[in-house]
Amino acid sequence: MSNNDKDNPTYICNRCVGQCGRAIEDASKTADPEHKALRKPPELKADLDKFVIAQEDAKREFAIAMYEHARRREVSQGAGFLIVDDEDGQPEEVEIEKSNILAMGPSGSGKTHIARALAKSLDLPFYVGDASRLTQAGYVGDDVETLLQGLVGAANGDIERAQWGIIFLDEIDKLARKSGRTQSGHRDVTGEGVQQALLKLVEGSQIAVPRGQGAKMMVSGAGGTDVIDTTNILFIGAGSFAGIEEIVEDRVNKTSRMGFGGTQRKTLEHDAYRQVAVEDIEEFGIIPELVGRLPVRTSTYKLTEEDLATILTKPKNAILKQFRAMYQMDGISLQFEEAAVRAIAKEAAKRTTGARALREVVKAVLKPYSYEATSDPTIKSILITEEAVLEPGTATIVRENTTASA
Image (cartoon, rainbow, N blue to C red):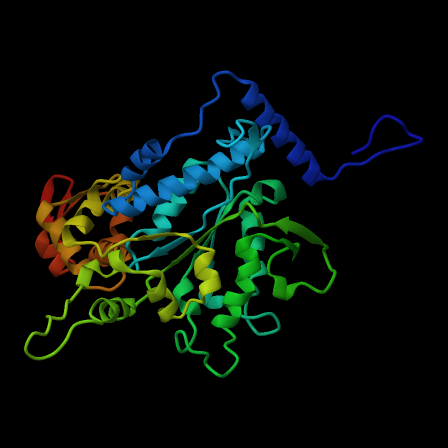
């Protein structure tokens, strides 16, 4: 793109055109007196309640952290934030540092779901990275820089927007040192080595990131690089931390004694995540330097059968609503009896994948009808009963001018 001066043309790339357009749009929104104000934590949590069942503590912690992150971004785009110093009464500009998050809890309990919903609500780029795929630089696997590539992709190539985005590092517990606090005595390529590599990324640093998909596939220098400042990127480390219950229980019961006058050993069960301390996380195998860079710690808990039944029907994106909508597109009314909903929740609760198991169970229940029923114009409705959950293929099917069992 050039100006009208043919003797001295100037050019601007497509990426810059896009960024300029967004800058103008943001400026117009700021100038608009009716521009929507930044939503407060209670409002963010109220939105979460429409999509996420239970996990009240985690929803509050995430809402606060995300609000503070969005507030920091808002302040950075203005003239700074001034406070009055208590000592001399003079206004002083203060830089507010980010507070990264460590989320612990069983698989399928809603950690990713909560973070993703909030990021969408605040219109922030959001990227989920799998920590178990990361290795130290020079080894087969993904470098930590690929997390930044993914975030830039989520921001549609807008570097400025990506630098205020969110990286959700899932399965961070898989990076635990092989022997907890003790050095393992060998090169821990996928554990402590990756934790060390993450430190400067999480803390805030200027990182050169190759353009394109997959740093491992980039030829040195090919395609160029982008320098990304991670100072304002919010990092959320999440994992199930399976086995940390025993560590917490051992610490809590350290003073219990056997014999006469001894104290009874406490069994924590569901309360273990509530009592996790920094020393427990370090004992699990996360190095102190990384724990210190994740100052906000919260937990989600195992979902009950009642919670799972509610997830099936109540949220705006409830699983049963999704399947009913898909069948309705083919002119079929799909219905679930209340007893069937409870049976699905009970079956899902037996599995170890939490809420993710619900879709698996529902798909298995609907499998006998998913292939042929959607192309059969005579079928008007399918009623899923408790029996149809326990014995798939026995649902009640209503056809034109007739009623028959599957």
